[in-house]
Image (cartoon, rainbow over all chains, first blue to last red; front, side):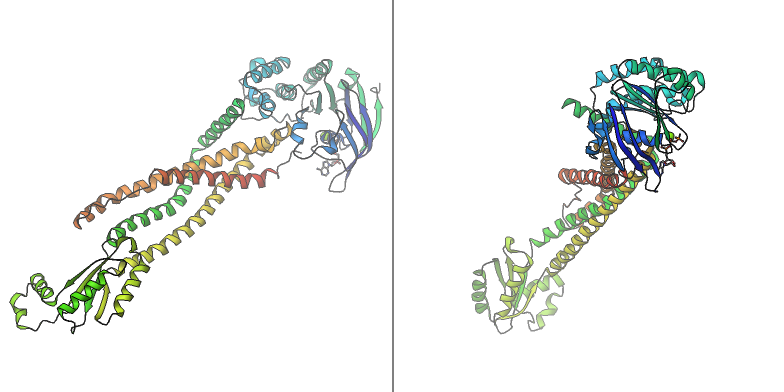
Length: 223
Length: 303
Ligand SMILES: Nc1ncnc2c1ncn2[C@@H]1O[C@H](COP(=O)(O)OP(=O)(O)OP(=O)(O)O)[C@@H](O)[C@H]1O
Ligand SMILES: [Mg+2]
């Protein structure tokens, strides 16, 4: 699903955020991306979402060379990737329903189909009853689940999450991680950047560890 | 296709809702645009009305030809006959000095007091030009031709002031066009500025929409509708302003016209002009918004 081939990223400031990073992630795999603060985790996810472009090397996503995706094709490319953010990035002046519906509205989904899909996504994250509420009235964990519902409502084959449990306590973190693992169980490829080694240990999936922009470790979580 | 129209309708009502959510700011913008559009439009209405007044006079333009004292009646009649044959002349009427004096006596009220004098008046030929040729150039050419005649002393175009008025109107019309261009540009700037603020206020939302795969066209759409709507409402305000001003002066103008025995009425914007005004407003709004959005959306990239 994802192939990095000697990818380097140097920001305009001259800082090398990633250096010669290579790895493969198979379809329907679930992988954790770890490393110290500033190691380059967010940068790596931004390269996948085409928020940033690599300075060197090639990135294949879903068998497509991302370098060949032009500016005007980027929106259509992004519709195939569900993105979950640490600070959830919900629109506070719209209801939970409207937030989750946004990716479908953007891609011009038919009205009746839209309602059905939004409710299915909200049902999966257990927030069907809150569809008319505004995000501000929800707890942090609930907000993050709305963000996840928004990321999966399009049924993308790939889900990337940048510190999805960054602001949550242990119980809520477990809940969110189990939710993501459940999507993986249903065939979605999942890549999660996180500091939360407890969750990494608990789920026991493959780990990619970055250190100062270089891939330091690739394998099962260290015991 | 139905889906496409439905989406546009949704964005339309969404944009309308957005305007209604900040009524004060929206009204301010609409009022400013209204004034900017009302100024040149009002000037055009004014020119149109003045032209209709002067047009009525133009059709009765007449040339008075004063003959030399040496020209006697039969010679004058003969000459008048020749004038009638000049192309562009509809009518030519000779008034002998005797008749002219009689009329002067009647009008002045001096009566028999004048009888004691030698008749000081020359013979006059009143020339009425053909209506279709009554434009300034043809009229001047005719006057020049009459002046060349050896029988003629003075030629007076009775309505030279009509020409002056027309020249003045032409200047005003050009000024109005210039004003329209300047104010159209300012409408673009006003709308561009409100849209720029709107884009800035919603940058988080724009970033999120870009991240979940919204195209540039999708993001632009509500701003374009918003700009077009503000332009349209501004034009509507301009229309109201003009009609209101006209209704204020309509009464006095009708009274004044009555004094001159005319049934002249002030004419406002007709249906076609009103539609053109509204369309111009909407178009300017759309364009101003398009220019602003195009510039500012590309500055907002998710990070
Ligand atoms: N837009 C940018 N311009 C310049 N340098 C940047 C930019 N974004 C990130 N960096 C730098 O690149 C390095 C990697 O940043 P990145 O955000 O990928 O780290 P991270 O692993 O996600 O860290 P954290 O765990 O704190 O989120 C950091 O040193 C950071 O300062
Ligand atoms: Mg980060």
